[in-house]
Amino acid sequence: MSDRDLIAECSQIIYDGFIRYNSNFHRMTKRARTRFEHRDWKGHQQDIVDRVDLYEKSVRRIVLGLRKILGKRVDDKKLWHKVRSYFGERLDQVPDNDFIKTFFNSTTRRIFGTEGVDQGIEFTSSSPSDDLRLIMSLNIRRYPYWVSLQRIFETILDDFSFRIPYDDIVNNADRIANTIDAHTKEKFSKDIEYIRFEFIDSFFYQAERAYLVGKLILNKGETPIVIAFKNEDSGITVDAVFLNEKEVSLIFGYTRSYYFADPNSVIGAVHFLKSLIPKKPIDELYTVLGRLRQGKTERHRTFSQHLSITKDKFMHAEGDTGLVMIVFTLPSYNLVFKIIRDKFGYPKTVTREEVIEKYKLVSKHDRAGRLIDTQEFLNLEFPINRFSKELRDELLDGANESVRKEGNNLLLKRVYTERRMRPLNLFINEASEEEAALAIIDYGQAIKDLAQTNIFTGDLLLKNFGVTPHNRVIFYDYDEVSLVTDCNFRDIPEASDFEDEMLADTWYYVGKNDIFPEEFIKFLSMNEKLKAAFLKHHQDLLTAQYWRGVQEKHIKGEVSLVVPYTSTTTVA
Image (tube, rainbow, N blue to C red; front, side, top):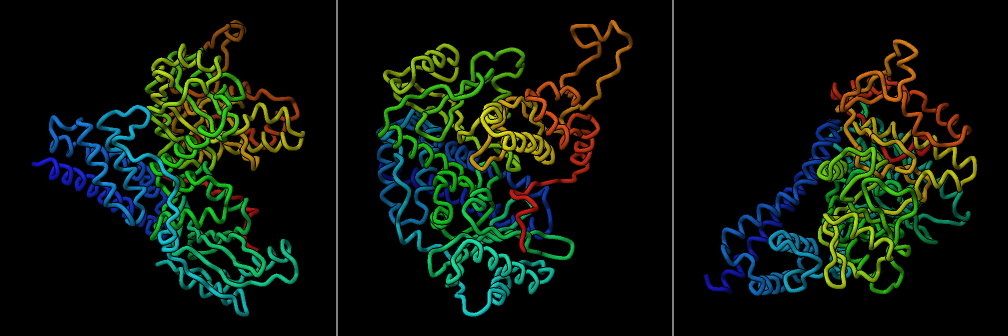
């Protein structure tokens, strides 16, 4: 082939690869409706895994094809510079072209093992698309208000129907109407008027719920409205209605599995969601819709932009020093960065490879609103002068496998990023007695919620849990995470005599996967009042019987999913 033909052929291969990936992504996403209607929660969990794996498998397949076509010229950067130009010229006005460019970058980074950013062969991160044509192309259904909220929602429920009937469409509409009426009377002035309702023309599926996402337009502003549906023996029914930014932000939180939603314009859906929850970062909105690579691209772009206009330095994150990870943050930005140490402190026995696999496990699992979303980045570069001396020295001395100095930069070969939270052990010392007690009770509930989704946190120390701005307790240290079904929960055997009890070590055999819940009390480093509050609500967590009961349900295939709201947040 001539160079021009070769450039065109490579571009075609990458573009076709993206189209194939995108089609498979949509196919898996559309399957969520059938999963919901059939209450196939086990199948839904498998789809979570398969959809996360899909992107990497697609890129790997394309790279193999390109290596075959290009042969020895596969790493010819001059050729790839021309491919990038040719490819980019043809994407103008193509819907969601940012996704296609990200796919291109993933391909070249895998071929070249790119460190930092190579502007010659990559599309550098630009600002999020603000093409009004793409944003406005989102399919929205609009319902003007005339006389009755109930009549409007009878129509809406009929329009947004399932193959399974509603249990009682009139009653459901009436309950939604009563909830909206009560909310507006409480939150707005008496002269407030309804103008219309607007809903994205696609359900959002997650765990055992389907959601309608929209907004209520009033004569004096607007407010979000999200309706949660559940599928019961009697049919589909409305389970909850959310009408304020805080509630909607929790629904689209960074501690839950990614949604299965198929709007006709992803960019349009992201901008619509941003209008409902303006404090939510754009990168998290892409991620929550399952577009993980685009979320990573936006996270890198926004952080790099912030870094370029600030002067503060990376420093150790607040909290106890990690035995497995070096954790640091930029004080002016709401992220933490985690680097795997070369050597782990006692008593950690996991290997580096096992830690990496555990973080992968969490990325593919139903996180039950209790595991923070973690983005893994490879080969990031940051200016070395932006690191405090103490942090820089520790990274170079204690994490050589993950960090090296490259000129005036530090190259982070593997780094995990997470939203920054207040460590629970620090929070309970700063909060009021009431707030601390509520946090400790929620700490126990977090452990139970994760157990219901077959996750055992392993390390129960308070320092491994954080508190969100909404005072929700989240687990974020994954180096000892395992499946409940892989654990052997045991009662501590009785000592045969006094001498056994006085031994420094245990007098009984402890296998690799043995867990003794009675010992969990050792991790509860809190004052007596807080410990009493924990035991009042979660004494059962300290018994092997509780854990074996949860384990038995999972072995039987009785899938339990945790919804992102409590029973108190229901329709009127």
